Picture 1 (cartoon, rainbow over the protein chains, first blue to last red):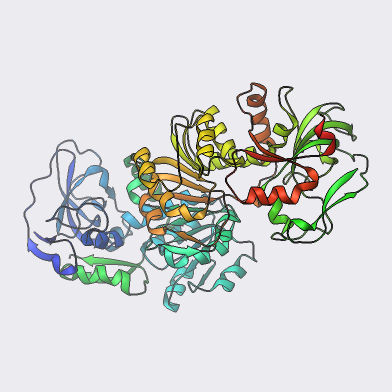
Picture 2 (cartoon, helix red, strand yellow):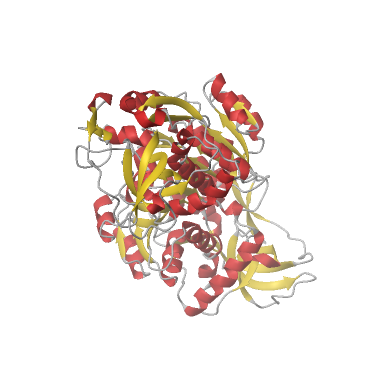
Length: 314
Length: 324
């Protein structure tokens, strides 16, 4: 089978499309023929050596979707022929051996591309919204709402009775955000507009993918005792302390590394209900063939988002 | 009675010692003859006009201790003659405690054990409610070890004492040798200078469960570096501007919380006083007094507190308190 292999940490030139052979699925493993793979910011950060300690060579990715073609001993939840999404196994490849806990049924009305858009974005959005402490009726501001995590947060938030406001840098992005249930969609830096949405009351919860760029603004927009969940950030950033201290706001760093395996399983069970009901529906933005995986990763940090970036493996 | 009035926003000279009338206590109110007054950093900022101004002139102060001289209708818990401490920040309309007497809501009035001086009682209100809240926001649990930066002042001392009774181990920093001795005497496992980065790193091991920083926002980057992944950094101090290490906060899953006295929830302070009372009566929590000033020297006392280097609490003593 063909796979992308990272041979050297660093730029996209360290990624190579090559022929690989997989061993048969071991105990508790599921062999999936992948038709799509999700491209997440962490894939690029891992390749750069900026997060985790990846040992080269390795096949990148964590999210994908396809069909079960073999199961190892002890696998009970899925069988050959099942349509599934994968969340937590190498996926920049035509096939993968995934632990059973990383394989989940893909509802019939979702495409493989949509399945590949579930793993990290929906887990992150679910967990970040939980950490934000938002309760039904609360205003929630989602920065970068038109990207993979952002769209998931808009949908999950709305499904839980939150009043979601999203930001996106392009008109197309903002239209998408509103079409998926946000009460308003504005530009990232529209302080007055964002204030006006809540009639000056402020946001009890804010999710940001660009912590360094938005923190100063977010401290102004947060309601007293509110929580800003920082999902992504470069940094450091200088802010005026009274904004930091004056409202007892929590700035809460978020990393998927701190989600326990038990929590992951519970979140996937909970997501199933949302997908079945149509309250959550992954939106696909740009598609790239497997050989352009490097380009796909770089585009996440360069181009405005209108949904999820995926690799197609058909 | 006499009181220290803030006549206009400004320096210590804006205080005036004047005769002012005091009404009988209204419904739900308690009248207290004040025998000691607690000085808090916020008092100085209010005097300087850094907060939305009260109507001038006004009597500042939230904390005090003394004896109950009268109670209004509907007061149930407190009786005339009781020794009490007053903690009136955000309970009712404030304390107006820089005075010889005041009327406060019953919820701001709590029994003071016999073995406590009035000065000690005056040191309880804001430091021990703020200290408890900082500890609660830190999410530190029994068995954890936390770092308390700026541990020798009123709030720092309160955090150390709360932590000790709750089973949370502490490491404290203070800028003077006397401060570090004081920190050790409050039960901290170790006491270091703020600048001793290597020493702090060695004590942190894989990271403190939380850092409570009462000292200054300038240490924020170090605080985050010293905190274990998933831990909390609680800032109690005010200085500008602050550099926030947002990438490290995200990467380690740290939660940074700034504590403000403007965001008390209704009833939150009363709950903390109800928690505090058993520890006071058991003698397990007792404030430490650093400096006493006559009430008429309130301005000078505030400036001394603002200079830093405190080893415990600054209190003011009204004339009647000298002999109490």
